[in-house]
Length: 370
Ligand SMILES: NC(=O)c1ccc[n+]([C@@H]2O[C@H](COP(=O)([O-])OP(=O)(O)OC[C@H]3O[C@@H](n4cnc5c(N)ncnc54)[C@H](O)[C@@H]3O)[C@@H](O)[C@H]2O)c1
Ligand SMILES: [Zn+2]
Image (cartoon, rainbow, N blue to C red):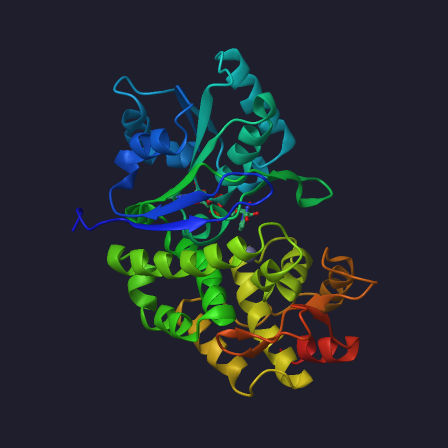
């Protein structure tokens, strides 16, 4: 099956940046060099950036595909806590010390942390060099590698410093999911269910039906799921290259999700928080009257199938979650805004606006009865 033809998507980057391709296919980790050269012909020297876990698993194959003698691999310690300005500075200094010039390009090999961090290094190095995104976690494959957002965290919050830096190409090898821990797989499936929930009900239901194969890392199931999710994400970001319009629908589940994530001091992971957030925001929609009754229950069942939580953990301080809600970045005129569904697979569009405020009492009610 290794020879099955890769699936390719085109994504509009906007803002004067070149459009780019997303390629999904088995065995691509051994063909990064050829795709990278075709996508960024000006680059004469590729440098791979990976966290130490992913580097140990895949960097030598990727480096060998970039040049017969291999290429430099820069590593950093795995984990969100290293997606920061100190690590950005360190990687940048190591590129300078290695003499990387304007004809260099970066291969960001890894999960979303690496994509964001190495992408931001590429965005700023010598005012910007090309980056090839090679996502290895499901989160990165279905979400962070496509869209061009890069950046780092600061003590004041996540992703507060960054840049739009669309990749030269995104190369997704579903076989990488084989080494990903099960909980990390579930984490990424939250965003896959989200893609179905906002655009394509059949796709959402298919993710539910394939849950056990996906959680087990079955390569064919993962490949089909990644293709389905990238189809949704690439369409949405192509129609709205920067934030402000349609892209907002990708925030479904995220207004309450971010609040729960922050209130738990990140004990609840992003994917888990988004899973809970989607169920609660579907309930909000049902309460407000725009979401077809039964949608929240169906979403809940889908998310349970992929082993994600659908209610806040017992003991979580909901008043903290409410406080975070009012400081969420989507707050307009002091009120949090929500993306609400009309039914599974479709977002309710209120007069061209994709997100809207909801009465505080309804939000509190839904949170408290969860
Ligand atoms: N730029 C965007 O649009 C966007 C969108 C969503 C998320 N993100 C960011 O993505 C990050 C989360 O991504 P993540 O969950 O991939 O985190 P991550 O990069 O930390 O990866 C999770 C863990 O899995 C390991 N790993 C990755 N691939 C592996 C593989 N194939 N085999 C074994 N282990 C593997 C990593 O070493 C790490 O320990 C957050 O920082 C988030 O802000 C960005
Ligand atoms: Zn998310």
